[in-house]
Amino acid sequence: MERTWWKESVIYQIYPRSFYDSNGDGNGDLAGATAKLDYLKDLGIDIIWLSPIFKSPNHDNGYDISDYRAIMDEFGTMEDFGRLLSEAHARGIKIMLDLVANHTSDEHPWFIESRKSRDNAYRDYYIWHDGKNGGPPNNWESFFGGPTWEYDDKTGQYYMHLFVKQQPDLNWENPDVRHEIYDMMKWWFDKGVDGFRMDTVNMYSKAPGFPDGEPIPGTPYGDKSPHMHNGPRIHEFLKEMNREVLSKYDIVTVGEAPETSVEDAILYTGFDQGELNMVFTFEHMWTDYQNATQWCDLKFDLVKLKNALSSWQTGLHEKGWNSLYWNNHDQPRVVSRFGDDGEYREVSAKMLAACLHMMQGTPYIYQGEELGMTNVAFSGIDDYDDVATVNAYREYTENRGVSHGDMMRYIHQTSRDNARTPMQWDNTENAGFTTGKPWLKVNPNYPVINAKAQVNDPDSVFGFYKKLIRLRKEHPVIVYGDYELLLPDHPAIFAYLRKLGGETLLTVCSFQKECVEFSVPDILPLEKAKLLLSNYDSPDITRTFTLQPYEARVYLFA
Ligand code: GLC
Ligand code: CA
Image (tube, rainbow, N blue to C red; front, side, top):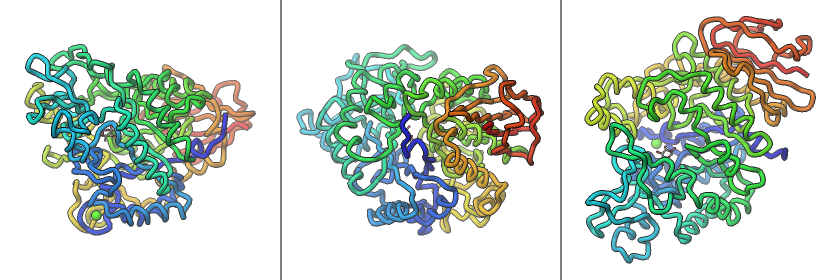
């Protein structure tokens, strides 16, 4: 397999609004990110993924862009961006931007033009359609609630929006749209950015004719999923983008790709495909969903989780490349989700980190994950900001018979705002995030969980992440080795082997607080075992040993 820098890198995601506020207005900003570069350098990461920093009316926190070539007011200026980029580069850190090109803001000049008249030059930049039987063109429900279509009086047609109505979908069938996007990407690459994370990249191509989806029980809607994910022209579009833009630069790309199978992923990321470097799969994120929705309080199933991750590990091996993540700005905090955010918070946060980082792929760390930050439980819906959460609250309590109490429980468990509370820097007011009033309340556990308490402690969660990143640089088996899942049906242990040349890496993780026994496979000679990492004090290796609550061990047999 070809060795490349992006396979050997660790990526850190910054959600700028919640990272660090440099001027006391309550919003994190670019100068704030620059101020924390030394912290990231100390952690050891190679690349920063910045969630959208572009001009936006913020109906979906920057994922609704009104100008791709300007910086959002609250985040600063283009000079601030230039400074962040050059200061990062000076530290050997690359910067990846968020390309949101499935849709724009409804305040983007293209859409303002597009809605003016049916023969406007920008009309076909978006997806306009006549209604059907006095209603929308089809029965698709938008991701954040309500129909996927909005009627526009002015011209008597509907426009498509897979997300909120302020996020009209671009029409990728129109070559002018594609070339506008390619030009904009080149413009950023020419400024020196090092890559793009591509938002909802597998939604660019929709099924011709926009067919109705299968009815979803208990709702007036149909399932749009098969008609707008991985559509008929998506690979053609991405190959074109690669040919015209990506292949001309030494950059990294990752596409967000829900509803994507391993076979699809090989098409997107295959080394000989000429599309993307990697995609984000969602299978492992859906192991605690019920009836295809996050709004429930189901506990995840470890066997499902292992199988989801493992099928990607083996399926992509030597064909394409994996991204490895537990967290991002759309997911609840992993220590609360798959670990224990109470008594075993630190050990379980470390265990989860080891479990993920020893796999094959490029690991992503979401801000605060390296501190073991947890979910939050605000008591009222008014403390929540996320449009998906607020809309779901209204829909489920008003139309789907869910009580306020139940819905708040679901929100506490799964809301995107769990990830978006401000970064916890120290134990001073507002976690040291801002001197003003934070745009979203801080998690009240900041006096205990914060960066200041951890950065100088090698036994902290932060110290553990540092070690993981260092190990990846020291042992090619972690990057390039093949993968074999052990004990696929064990309900509490996630264990796997990685092999490269004559070396074998064994990772063993317990996902429960009860002690549990593990036997080292007979083929591994105990006398050759070297402990690389553990979240308990120097355990001994015997053929069969007992794992403590949420224990993780990594051994190298060489
Ligand atoms: C992606 C983003 C999410 C956003 C959505 C619409 O899923 O990660 O935050 O709401 O796309 O742009
Ligand atoms: Ca600010």
